[in-house]
Length: 211
Image (cartoon, rainbow, N blue to C red):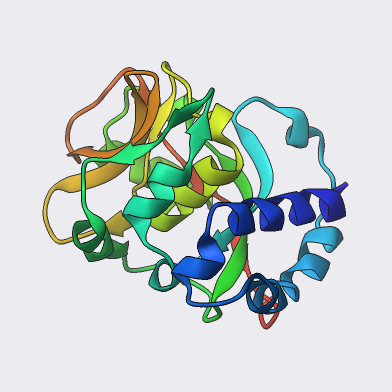
């Protein structure tokens, strides 16, 4: 099950132009990500795998290797292309917050992702301690892009999600939601609640050197 899903996600990245954005051929790109497949295959299959808003794993390419604005435009949800209110340079200003350890390789696996239904209408500031108490980690901006790239239908009008794991030094928190029926990467204030925004989180981040 996980083997086929890993191959599907790898194919999706290739089809959406990630090798070109990384300055690689498709074969070179595949070779760089291939070691992660055994980690995906070793993950347990849980009952939560079928739960709405939950994903067992996502293949994440680190932000240094792709253009965030182009990646959003490559996302397709119900035949509508995604978009970002921020350009490439502004997206890159949002970096992982203290306490989040991103694996060192070009890509990694993010596991047991939840889009945050339980934190709808909770401010990002108030959602953070909830996630930490649950021993979960908030998603970064690039992880949010990865999640919607592979699972665009997870994004719903009544359940977008904030990406608390990336900040740029001000009060903004980036988020994904539906706007004009299109996937949108935007931002909201950290102290403002929204009935349609939860806070996405994951259980772990794995690479071939740190299983």
